[in-house]
Image 1: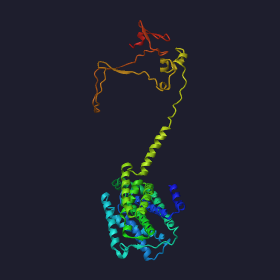
Image 2 (image 1 turned 90 degrees about the vertical axis):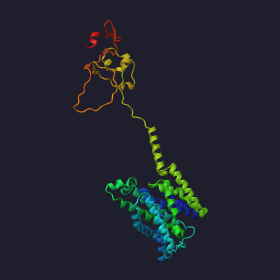
Image 3 (image 1 turned 30 degrees about the horizontal axis):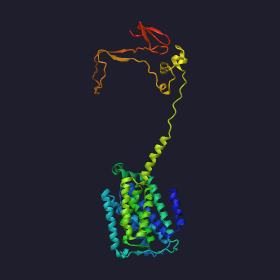
Image 4 (image 1 turned 60 degrees about the vertical axis):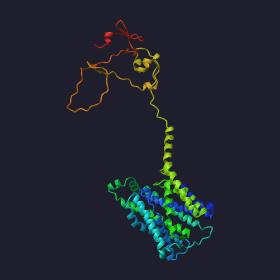
Length: 442
């Protein structure tokens, strides 16, 4: 983000071409409109298809103020941009209160209806708006070489202001409530939160910024007409840019605007009226590509893939923790039978006769224990279904359960298996002998 801001600050100084600077002004204005639209629709999930209404209202407020108050060209109209935003925000309070009483498709239809109502009013209120003839705004007093530079920096300042507000809302408790409304509004309402005020506040704030952007755009154009102020393609453009970059994120509308808007503005300047139709075709194709390949947008999809790559990269270079060190154990060939070291050696080392590996050392020696033997019953165990029993029920087994000790058929000195000959058990390694009667329990 810092790199983008620094590049935008020095862009007019590096280029110095008025036509290229005018394209940059259009890009900044439409990107700001996309960010302002995302403050409400992206965070709350209410898709507004009539946000161009407040774009036109802010434009007409600035034009009428300059006409009635005789504001000369120059920096004076720039000072009226907050007034245009305030007027658009005031108009959005009753309109938003009516529209936000509905949800989803009904809300979308109401916003479209509001847009066409104000567009028809702009055509029919000839004494106020001038009808199709329009209203001319004061011409700037700067030289031709610096004609677009003030507009560029004012548009950049307005864009940075909208981005700052969007970032603050996204990381504040207010934005958390808006995102919760987008996920499950009924659950948020059940928690006792008055979601109506949160939605209306975001709606008014978004409309105010859109009105300021519309006023600056009309002052830059120099002429306002109902078709230029209330342009239905504006909503399609800002929605496409927002979804292309990533709806509901701070950087999504910025990325979408910087990628799509330069192409749209260039086609409009080169092809004129025919360029608008080509723009709609291209924007429709871009929207289909995003829906099919990147349904979440460029920024969320790239962030998700980056997180997956980072996780796999860290897992690849992560080494397991070293196992605890074991004490060196002498080889079985160097230990005398019957010595204390022979008893201290593990079973695996004494029985195999070689130095054990770490895996065998990690296996503890299982102590001798008594195993239950059921007399008079079949020794084959068959899997059965577990049936729950009550606390007072009794369990019975066929046969008597006795405990029989496990017979140890190994030498107590070297743990070698005994060999049997004529009723005598003897160890072939150390020569220890034991009568068979002492080995088998009585």
